[in-house]
Image 1 (cartoon, helix red, strand yellow):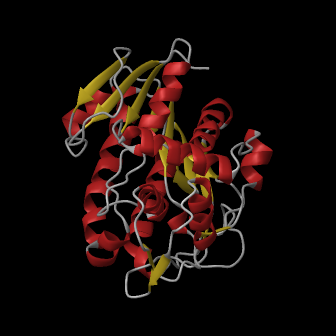
Image 2 (cartoon, one colour; image 1 turned 135 degrees about the horizontal axis):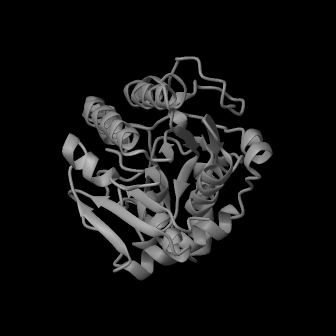
Length: 316
């Protein structure tokens, strides 16, 4: 689907960016990818690697020059501890980067942009969130991150609908992604990679932040990329899609599944309610993506967890 097109992936050393690059290589795409402070996790002479700072306007221009399709995967991200203690660190850098990239893409005549947003833009609710369920009321610990993401979505809409010669921009709101090449560092990882590492390293006891009762939509990274590719092919103008599993998964049960998969029969689990935890429940409705994009997640949670655990152990 990317024949005769030049594709740019920003954030090529990150979790989603790395997996996306692998899929694009399999598609024989003509690829450019940006990296900044972290080195690339894969090697390929078929990728035009660009070392740059996307907070710099000229670097954004260089990145977008000659590009047909842009996947905006670069982001300053953090785990629960950082979001709890210094959420402002995620505000200005992300807003500046997103704004400069969209400006550079528009000036370079990029035909299609896919922006990776976040399901934090939805309010706390026990029902599955649809794309038009935005209220401006966020889970309190996510207020700054969610506000940044939603305003970035609005900027995307400006370029797609509010100016002359608009640019096609699709916003993807993914579920909680997991899979190979995720961030497994204690200070910055999300909850599922932390579980995987603790099981693989045979922590005794396995410490869980909070009570383990949080409910999340966990989606394997390849399924998200399927949705992104469908958006490139089928979505025109401006649109927003939830790309998730559409399933509810309790974190405590996910840990039990990992323990069973890895045959850690002597594992003991210890919950620590003094540590920060995040949104207690997040359900995501994927009806629109199924209807408009033909999207359907293919990876059962047990299979995805096993593949991720196997990859993590092999990478050490």
